[in-house]
Length: 178
Image (cartoon, rainbow, N blue to C red):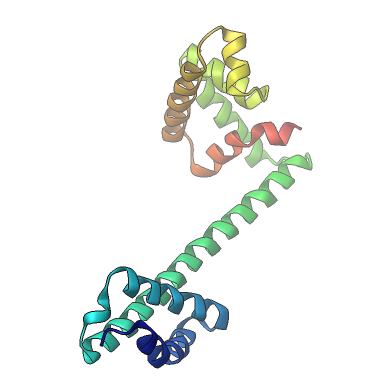
């Protein structure tokens, strides 16, 4: 069975219906099935016998749906996390800082002061003064690449010393000050 048009006509609708059972969205189902047909065209799977081709198409469609759902779950997690951090930033912007938040900021400053002088300097210029890497390089009279390296090493060191939330606060501190 090697005629693509025949295969497409025979299996397109059943595959779309099958995909729809997984993703419950007609447009997404159509896109996923289209991707499956593109895949069999690229991989030259048209020469399989009828039984194997049918199994391959349905298995590929199922896998495409599962991958799509997995990706959606990851995207949702990141969106929820971004929304949480956005709320956190707004809360900090409002000026209402509790004792816990003051302690968090104190830990951030303590971690920064534990860095070597060259790493502390680029972090402070970047995060507290809001300078770009090029501006830091000009101010310190060093190459931009050196600034990038120092920032990377400073952030790597801070990542070991701070919790994920505190590190996120540090990375967004310039936005909080605006």
